[in-house]
Image 1 (cartoon, protein in one colour):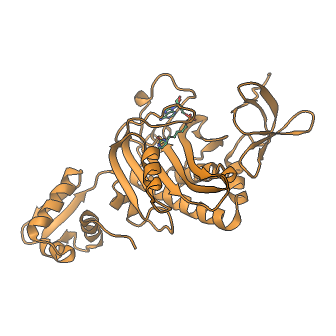
Image 2: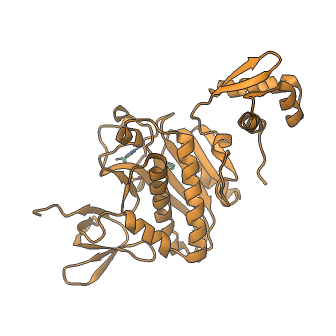
Image 3: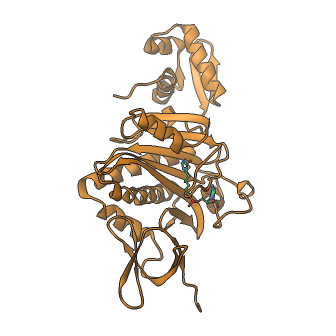
Length: 331
Ligand code: BT5
């Protein structure tokens, strides 16, 4: 069962009221605390940016809510089975992946979500970093404990990618594309990155952390000048801000649905959904594998998430790591 914090309960009472007002007496009855304790909770909500009026003899009225990724905001109306029963919001942290891994090592249950307003050491792949300014984006990690072999765990990267694409479309109407293995693009520019990390033994996964960074309301000035790929945010593409809370709720719902499907039907439906979002499927590509270049037609994904490239001689090459780019006309 989910347990509600006093703040969460008060926000719920505001949501349920038909008159707009919730009396102090009612809050103190529901929480089972004194009127002074109620006042302290109202003050703490105000400090977070909630605008709450106190009207004598009528009670409290909520007149404005901030777009803060508080667990109670995300959970409100979140209809999921596994994901998000336990949500930890951190105003600032090093990396949500590090925090989620530490909690998973300490025994956290499947479905735990760690979300931060800002990261000081946001991680990309291969020791790279993820730019994570405050108040604009989403930095989130989910702990899963699937009963799969360690070699199968990379399939979950594609699950996160499809979930992010669907959440973007649900919240903004935009149609993202994916780039193997872990990028989500809008108009060819990177708008989200994924970093899945795993703890495993030889033949079993202890846990997987799905790390997801989405540029939601970041402005062009907030991007560093030197990035590996051109980057963008939903707000830049849309010309308006999006609600971080609404996006997060949509994302968790999508992850929940896809994970349920993954557990019941295996990886194929998720991999097929990813292939549908990939605009390079069937096109000529070059894969830079550091030591060599592979040229061919992008054929799709193998069951373990490896990239399949059909070479000019008709054979299939299976690529586990590399950087994909389209073959430009005239090359
Ligand atoms: C990724 O790495 O794309 C994985 C990013 C995962 C970030 C999330 S945030 C929540 C969770 N907690 C963490 O600590 N991490 C995860 P990679 O493919 O290696 O791309 C990193 C490269 O993208 C950097 O070297 C930059 O060039 C560029 N980059 C950095 N920050 C960016 C941003 N906010 N938007 C677009 N590109 C960025």
